[in-house]
Amino acid sequence: MDDKKKKKSKRYLKEIIFLVLWSIIFTKFFIVDIEYVLSEKYLPGVVNFLSYRFIFYLFLLILVWYILGSKRFFKNLAYFIGFPFYVLFWKIPKVFLWNIPRYLFIKRYWIMIYSYINSMLNNLSNFKFQLFKAVLFFSSLILLFNTEIKAVLYFVLVSQLFLLIILIIDKFKVAFQPIGLFKINEELSKLKDKKKKKDFIDNIISKVEDAEIVEDENTDKEKRQEKIEKDKKDNIEQIVLIKSLFSFLSSRLKDFLSRRTYIIVFFLKTLTAFVTAWLFLSIMNYASYKISHSEYTLQIIPKFYNFIFYTFHSMLHGNIQGILPSGVLAQIIDIIAPITSILISGTLLTVFFTVKTDQYRDNLKEIIAFSDSQLDRLEKALIDYHKLTMDEALVFLESKKSYVCVIVKEINKIE
Image (cartoon, rainbow, N blue to C red; front, side):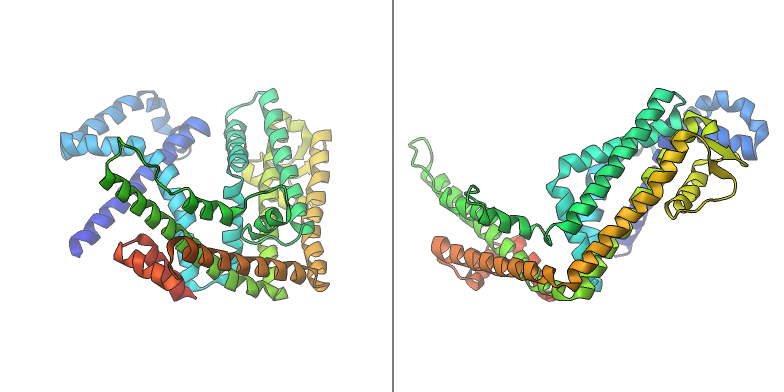
């Protein structure tokens, strides 16, 4: 047990070191030469020797190679080079898709769970556009700190305005559309739309019908049977897992009949939208300042964090000493900021009045009824296609040592 703890501690320490090193590299290449800034501020005498830093880093690298030995050195070097991909494609998805939901479930923070799951499903269902927005935002941020070219800075400003408009439109869609939870409302609309021949549950059940193996002389009989058994197991796993998750979510949907829960969830979304808009406007203000310093009347030499502080007051229709908008562009952004704040707050008021009229309850009851009907369809599919009840299906999967049994048990513990 001690060895495991030591290995775990070493791995965490290594990850922290690699994260710090990659943060320094990223900052150095895309934001500011951090070595020069720190040396100039704290060690002015070292600034003249920074041109020889490559020799120092090379010496340090050879020293680490000597201490670790060739095998460990190249193994860690490969890990270090691939570390950004490890973080991007494993660590971050794991945190958002497993660690955070698991923590919230363990602590039973139901309101935060509802908001989080709903948000994740909405983002994943529209993944390409969300990825485009993320790339646009981060590329604009990098350009903002690394260029003085006016055309590029105008691009940064316009891109943030575009993201701000999209954010406000999304908030109004959510406020004025019927209640949408866990994407179930979309499945309900598909069922109502006669042009949509198949919904989510149909797609799962159809896989059972397509699982038949066509006789082929070149296919070994034993292999065909193995394929049939595997397809059967996979489909039972899928139906049992979806039914368990659907059952859990369906039972929790009833909590939204409480006005308090619904308003708190939407308040959290509104707060997130306000902070996001604040960041977009801060970038717009700083880009405007870099385009022309005369856009603002200044009593200080402002940094980015000064504009974050200034933007917050601007959104609340206030001002701060040291930064005042004087140019046309700065004044336009100063007008946009409080309007954005009012619009985002207005979506919360819209939801509040909707809740007061109980309109959302009728819509929610329809979603709950639809969810319950889908549970019946899944159970019927198990009986019709596999001649198994839900309990018998779980026994079958336990005999096959399926991972689904572990998930279902964890869900049942929470319920």
